[in-house]
Image (cartoon, rainbow, N blue to C red; front, side, top):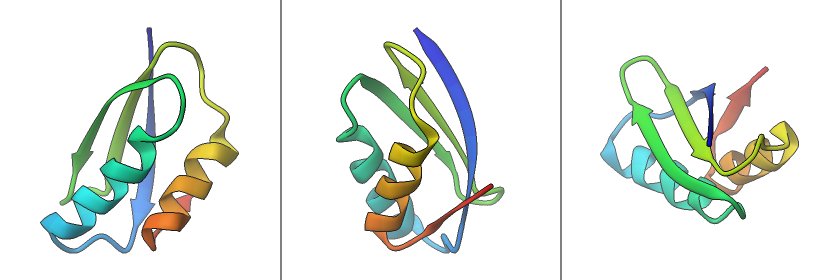
Length: 68
């Protein structure tokens, strides 16, 4: 298991959190997603290290942006 932290910009409510979590959970290997709305921090736990581009694409699909 590995955990990686990311920062997502543009989230303002619990709907935002749910959208981002839902999209990231669809990435193969992801086992858990924890989102802290106040800081924009997203911690993704997965079976193996994830490709940051895959995470960015999932966040983009939810309508938000991964800070790089």
